[in-house]
Length: 264
Image (tube, rainbow, N blue to C red):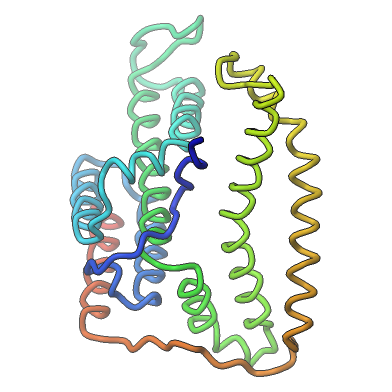
Protein backbone atom coordinates (compact mmCIF):
# COMPACT_ATOMS: atom_id res chain seq x y z
CA UNK A 1 0.00 0.00 0.00
CA UNK A 2 1.40 3.35 -0.98
CA UNK A 3 1.58 6.15 1.51
CA UNK A 4 0.05 9.57 0.97
CA UNK A 5 1.49 11.63 -1.85
CA UNK A 6 4.16 14.14 -0.99
CA UNK A 7 2.59 17.04 0.81
CA UNK A 8 3.27 20.42 -0.72
CA UNK A 9 6.26 21.94 1.01
CA UNK A 10 6.90 19.02 3.39
CA UNK A 11 10.13 19.62 5.32
CA UNK A 12 13.17 17.70 4.02
CA UNK A 13 16.20 17.70 6.35
CA UNK A 14 19.52 18.41 4.63
CA UNK A 15 22.83 20.27 5.05
CA UNK A 16 22.44 22.62 2.09
CA UNK A 17 23.29 26.32 2.16
CA UNK A 18 19.61 27.28 2.34
CA UNK A 19 18.93 24.79 5.13
CA UNK A 20 21.71 26.32 7.24
CA UNK A 21 20.39 29.88 6.92
CA UNK A 22 18.72 31.55 9.87
CA UNK A 23 14.92 31.07 9.59
CA UNK A 24 14.46 34.83 9.96
CA UNK A 25 16.59 35.59 6.91
CA UNK A 26 14.67 33.03 4.85
CA UNK A 27 11.32 34.37 6.00
CA UNK A 28 12.31 37.98 5.25
CA UNK A 29 13.74 36.97 1.86
CA UNK A 30 10.53 35.20 0.88
CA UNK A 31 8.46 38.18 2.03
CA UNK A 32 10.34 40.85 0.07
CA UNK A 33 10.69 38.73 -3.08
CA UNK A 34 6.99 37.80 -2.94
CA UNK A 35 6.08 41.49 -2.85
CA UNK A 36 8.46 42.26 -5.73
CA UNK A 37 6.95 39.49 -7.88
CA UNK A 38 3.88 41.66 -8.40
CA UNK A 39 6.08 43.99 -10.47
CA UNK A 40 7.20 41.24 -12.86
CA UNK A 41 5.96 42.26 -16.30
CA UNK A 42 8.90 42.64 -18.70
CA UNK A 43 11.26 40.05 -20.24
CA UNK A 44 14.09 41.45 -18.08
CA UNK A 45 12.19 40.89 -14.82
CA UNK A 46 11.12 37.43 -15.98
CA UNK A 47 14.78 36.56 -16.57
CA UNK A 48 15.88 37.98 -13.20
CA UNK A 49 13.21 36.06 -11.29
CA UNK A 50 14.01 32.85 -13.20
CA UNK A 51 17.72 33.16 -12.37
CA UNK A 52 16.96 33.88 -8.71
CA UNK A 53 14.74 30.84 -8.25
CA UNK A 54 17.12 28.61 -10.22
CA UNK A 55 19.91 29.65 -7.84
CA UNK A 56 17.63 29.12 -4.82
CA UNK A 57 16.70 25.60 -5.96
CA UNK A 58 20.34 24.72 -6.62
CA UNK A 59 21.40 26.09 -3.20
CA UNK A 60 18.64 24.16 -1.42
CA UNK A 61 19.64 20.82 -3.02
CA UNK A 62 15.98 19.86 -3.28
CA UNK A 63 15.70 17.31 -6.14
CA UNK A 64 13.72 18.67 -9.09
CA UNK A 65 11.39 15.61 -9.27
CA UNK A 66 10.54 16.07 -5.58
CA UNK A 67 9.92 19.79 -6.08
CA UNK A 68 7.77 19.14 -9.16
CA UNK A 69 5.72 16.52 -7.30
CA UNK A 70 5.25 18.92 -4.41
CA UNK A 71 3.99 21.68 -6.72
CA UNK A 72 1.77 19.35 -8.76
CA UNK A 73 -1.42 19.99 -6.73
CA UNK A 74 -1.40 23.74 -7.54
CA UNK A 75 -0.65 23.48 -11.28
CA UNK A 76 -4.33 23.31 -12.21
CA UNK A 77 -5.02 26.32 -10.01
CA UNK A 78 -2.29 28.28 -11.80
CA UNK A 79 -3.61 27.25 -15.22
CA UNK A 80 -7.20 28.17 -14.30
CA UNK A 81 -6.04 31.53 -12.91
CA UNK A 82 -4.12 32.26 -16.12
CA UNK A 83 -7.01 31.19 -18.38
CA UNK A 84 -9.37 33.51 -16.52
CA UNK A 85 -6.99 36.40 -17.20
CA UNK A 86 -6.74 35.39 -20.87
CA UNK A 87 -10.52 35.30 -21.27
CA UNK A 88 -11.33 38.62 -19.56
CA UNK A 89 -8.62 40.64 -21.35
CA UNK A 90 -9.95 42.22 -24.57
CA UNK A 91 -6.94 44.22 -25.79
CA UNK A 92 -4.54 43.76 -28.70
CA UNK A 93 -5.24 41.82 -31.90
CA UNK A 94 -7.44 38.74 -32.00
CA UNK A 95 -5.41 35.51 -32.10
CA UNK A 96 -8.00 32.71 -31.98
CA UNK A 97 -11.20 31.57 -30.27
CA UNK A 98 -11.20 29.25 -27.25
CA UNK A 99 -14.55 27.45 -26.91
CA UNK A 100 -16.23 30.48 -28.43
CA UNK A 101 -14.31 33.02 -26.36
CA UNK A 102 -12.08 35.46 -28.28
CA UNK A 103 -8.43 35.28 -27.20
CA UNK A 104 -6.28 38.36 -27.74
CA UNK A 105 -2.50 38.72 -27.83
CA UNK A 106 -2.50 41.01 -24.80
CA UNK A 107 -4.55 38.47 -22.87
CA UNK A 108 -2.07 35.69 -23.66
CA UNK A 109 0.82 37.87 -22.49
CA UNK A 110 -0.92 38.91 -19.25
CA UNK A 111 -2.09 35.35 -18.59
CA UNK A 112 1.45 34.02 -18.99
CA UNK A 113 2.88 36.68 -16.68
CA UNK A 114 0.17 36.03 -14.08
CA UNK A 115 0.85 32.29 -14.24
CA UNK A 116 4.57 32.92 -13.73
CA UNK A 117 3.96 35.23 -10.76
CA UNK A 118 1.61 32.74 -9.11
CA UNK A 119 3.95 29.81 -9.72
CA UNK A 120 6.89 31.76 -8.27
CA UNK A 121 4.88 32.65 -5.17
CA UNK A 122 4.06 28.99 -4.54
CA UNK A 123 7.66 28.03 -5.35
CA UNK A 124 9.01 30.51 -2.79
CA UNK A 125 6.64 29.22 -0.11
CA UNK A 126 7.45 25.60 -0.97
CA UNK A 127 11.21 26.15 -0.80
CA UNK A 128 10.78 27.86 2.57
CA UNK A 129 8.79 25.02 4.09
CA UNK A 130 10.99 22.33 2.49
CA UNK A 131 14.17 23.82 3.96
CA UNK A 132 12.82 25.06 7.31
CA UNK A 133 11.08 22.99 9.95
CA UNK A 134 7.65 24.17 11.20
CA UNK A 135 9.17 24.79 14.64
CA UNK A 136 11.83 27.10 13.20
CA UNK A 137 9.29 28.95 11.04
CA UNK A 138 7.18 29.56 14.13
CA UNK A 139 10.24 30.74 16.07
CA UNK A 140 11.17 33.12 13.23
CA UNK A 141 7.67 34.62 13.14
CA UNK A 142 7.66 35.11 16.91
CA UNK A 143 11.15 36.64 16.83
CA UNK A 144 10.34 39.08 14.02
CA UNK A 145 7.04 40.13 15.62
CA UNK A 146 8.48 40.45 19.13
CA UNK A 147 8.49 44.31 19.01
CA UNK A 148 4.68 44.17 18.78
CA UNK A 149 4.57 42.91 22.37
CA UNK A 150 5.08 46.54 23.38
CA UNK A 151 1.54 47.28 22.13
CA UNK A 152 0.09 44.16 23.84
CA UNK A 153 -0.12 42.14 20.61
CA UNK A 154 -0.35 38.40 21.48
CA UNK A 155 2.78 37.36 19.57
CA UNK A 156 3.29 34.14 21.56
CA UNK A 157 -0.31 33.05 21.00
CA UNK A 158 0.01 33.71 17.26
CA UNK A 159 3.25 31.70 17.14
CA UNK A 160 1.64 28.81 19.01
CA UNK A 161 -1.34 28.78 16.63
CA UNK A 162 1.03 28.80 13.65
CA UNK A 163 3.00 25.91 15.12
CA UNK A 164 -0.12 23.83 15.75
CA UNK A 165 -1.49 24.60 12.28
CA UNK A 166 1.73 23.61 10.52
CA UNK A 167 1.93 20.43 12.59
CA UNK A 168 -1.67 19.46 11.87
CA UNK A 169 -1.39 19.76 8.06
CA UNK A 170 0.56 16.51 7.54
CA UNK A 171 -1.53 14.79 10.22
CA UNK A 172 -4.79 15.68 8.44
CA UNK A 173 -3.25 14.66 5.11
CA UNK A 174 -2.48 11.24 6.56
CA UNK A 175 -5.97 10.96 8.06
CA UNK A 176 -7.57 11.82 4.70
CA UNK A 177 -5.42 9.22 2.96
CA UNK A 178 -6.38 6.56 5.53
CA UNK A 179 -10.11 7.33 5.18
CA UNK A 180 -9.95 7.30 1.37
CA UNK A 181 -8.08 3.96 1.41
CA UNK A 182 -10.71 2.53 3.77
CA UNK A 183 -13.46 3.59 1.36
CA UNK A 184 -11.53 2.20 -1.60
CA UNK A 185 -11.30 -1.15 0.23
CA UNK A 186 -15.11 -1.12 0.40
CA UNK A 187 -15.33 -0.59 -3.37
CA UNK A 188 -15.82 3.18 -3.29
CA UNK A 189 -12.85 4.05 -5.54
CA UNK A 190 -12.60 7.48 -7.15
CA UNK A 191 -9.28 7.44 -9.02
CA UNK A 192 -10.70 6.28 -12.38
CA UNK A 193 -13.77 8.53 -12.33
CA UNK A 194 -14.19 11.85 -14.18
CA UNK A 195 -12.95 15.01 -12.48
CA UNK A 196 -16.33 16.29 -11.24
CA UNK A 197 -17.34 12.87 -9.93
CA UNK A 198 -14.03 12.63 -8.10
CA UNK A 199 -14.69 16.02 -6.47
CA UNK A 200 -18.19 14.95 -5.40
CA UNK A 201 -16.88 11.58 -4.20
CA UNK A 202 -14.49 13.31 -1.81
CA UNK A 203 -17.32 15.24 -0.14
CA UNK A 204 -18.39 12.32 2.13
CA UNK A 205 -14.81 12.16 3.42
CA UNK A 206 -15.16 15.57 5.04
CA UNK A 207 -17.45 14.39 7.86
CA UNK A 208 -15.15 11.66 9.25
CA UNK A 209 -12.15 13.93 8.66
CA UNK A 210 -13.85 16.71 10.64
CA UNK A 211 -14.69 14.28 13.47
CA UNK A 212 -11.10 13.01 13.59
CA UNK A 213 -9.82 16.60 13.60
CA UNK A 214 -11.97 17.46 16.62
CA UNK A 215 -10.73 14.33 18.40
CA UNK A 216 -7.12 15.24 17.66
CA UNK A 217 -7.68 18.80 18.88
CA UNK A 218 -9.22 17.54 22.13
CA UNK A 219 -6.28 15.16 22.70
CA UNK A 220 -3.82 17.99 22.05
CA UNK A 221 -5.63 20.31 24.48
CA UNK A 222 -5.58 17.64 27.19
CA UNK A 223 -1.87 16.96 26.60
CA UNK A 224 -0.99 20.67 26.80
CA UNK A 225 -3.04 21.07 29.98
CA UNK A 226 -1.41 17.99 31.55
CA UNK A 227 2.03 19.49 30.87
CA UNK A 228 1.11 22.75 32.57
CA UNK A 229 0.92 24.94 29.46
CA UNK A 230 -0.21 28.49 30.18
CA UNK A 231 -0.51 31.34 27.69
CA UNK A 232 0.40 33.85 30.43
CA UNK A 233 3.88 32.45 31.06
CA UNK A 234 7.04 33.56 29.28
CA UNK A 235 8.56 30.66 27.34
CA UNK A 236 12.14 30.06 26.28
CA UNK A 237 13.45 28.26 23.19
CA UNK A 238 15.11 24.88 23.38
CA UNK A 239 17.32 25.77 20.40
CA UNK A 240 18.26 29.30 19.39
CA UNK A 241 19.60 30.53 16.04
CA UNK A 242 22.45 32.98 15.64
CA UNK A 243 22.46 35.52 12.80
CA UNK A 244 25.62 35.08 10.70
CA UNK A 245 27.27 36.69 7.68
CA UNK A 246 25.66 34.17 5.33
CA UNK A 247 22.24 35.36 6.50
CA UNK A 248 23.11 38.98 5.75
CA UNK A 249 24.47 37.90 2.35
CA UNK A 250 21.30 35.95 1.47
CA UNK A 251 19.07 38.81 2.58
CA UNK A 252 21.09 41.35 0.55
CA UNK A 253 20.86 39.15 -2.56
CA UNK A 254 17.08 38.84 -2.12
CA UNK A 255 16.75 42.60 -1.54
CA UNK A 256 18.80 43.30 -4.68
CA UNK A 257 16.64 40.96 -6.74
CA UNK A 258 13.49 42.57 -5.32
CA UNK A 259 14.86 46.01 -6.26
CA UNK A 260 15.60 44.86 -9.83
CA UNK A 261 12.12 43.36 -10.19
CA UNK A 262 10.48 46.57 -8.98
CA UNK A 263 12.75 48.89 -10.98
CA UNK A 264 12.77 47.35 -14.47
